[in-house]
Image (cartoon, rainbow, N blue to C red):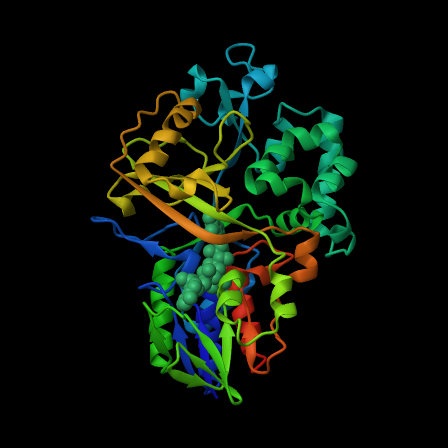
Length: 448
Ligand SMILES: Cc1cc2nc3c(=O)[nH]c(=O)nc-3n(C[C@H](O)[C@H](O)[C@H](O)COP(=O)(O)OP(=O)(O)OC[C@H]3O[C@@H](n4cnc5c(N)ncnc54)[C@H](O)[C@@H]3O)c2cc1C
């Protein structure tokens, strides 16, 4: 069969690989100049490794991408322990006041002494030991919360999780205070005005897949992407980069792309919103209308390349402080050695926002000016003189897993024969990730 794959992210690359292996004639279309989609990387002058435009790591529980790497013969994935912490505001939690009365948090588990002049505290919150030492909950609260976390970790997916929101579920099972301390700000920062509608499924998927060791790729994710592209070319896949799909029309039993080449089958890995726009003449309005009920947030990521790190030990910092309008800070070089980036430190500062949000139109300099006072609050000794600063937007990067989503998300099989969909909306109940992109790509290839 002659097959067109739309979109050259991990889903499109994986589907192309397995279909070409089966002997199909595959063409992969990607609108950007390089493959990789949301996981794409870049290399600044003097760097030895690529860096993802948006922070990326793997979990050691994610087998699909490891199996795919094995299938294509890629060996350079490694795992290591990292530190995740949360940032809290002292004024809201007087028990965090530092000095000799710094109750509850021994010095050795505090992230960063440079915080002493600030109104905030970074508290490691990664392991059961961290949780036991965590100063903002009582022992009975920790025991109750721990039992619920253990239940979520080992429970299979239950339909109950789709009948209740994460907020309702967590308040009910762990208690109101635990919700406020551990979860409320995480949900608000990640999902904005949709926070209270997110299904309990989300929290189940997060906890069940949680891992202490995180994975990365020698040379950066783009090294794996480039390697996969080489394997595709070896399998005679036609890889067209810089090729934007603008129209798809039905021609007899096949499809015509951009009013030129014809194909027997199409797999769209494009965001559902884009797919809906270009398939108006193929699908019925009722089919497409379902998708108009899906909601998304857009990723905004600022990358700072600096001489001094923002965080001393922590790789991943959740900002549980309502006065700091940042979702996360990920100090990449506390995970991956800075020697690969000209000896400079790399930090990501991330948000998910709506399309109309002011951030979407701001330049990297404007974003930096916006962030700087807040980064200084996190680390008082941090002097913001980034050597370089980069800005990345990920459109439709975060689907909103609410009740509408479950009813209206796309499925592989569409009403039109030989037109398939496999995109990041379909990783549900898991949050999107390269592991699930690979899984989708493999599964959809199995349908042809
Ligand atoms: C901020 C952020 C952090 C993340 N962190 C992680 C992480 O730590 N670990 C992890 O595993 N995953 C992470 N992910 C998710 C991961 O990047 C995605 O799940 C995965 O890359 C999705 O792959 P995909 O192929 O399904 O979609 P995409 O990568 O979105 O691929 C779709 C492709 O379609 C192309 N396209 C769009 N329109 C057209 C058109 N008209 N014509 C041709 N091509 C078109 C796009 O350019 C894109 O390349 C993160 C994502 C974001 C945004």
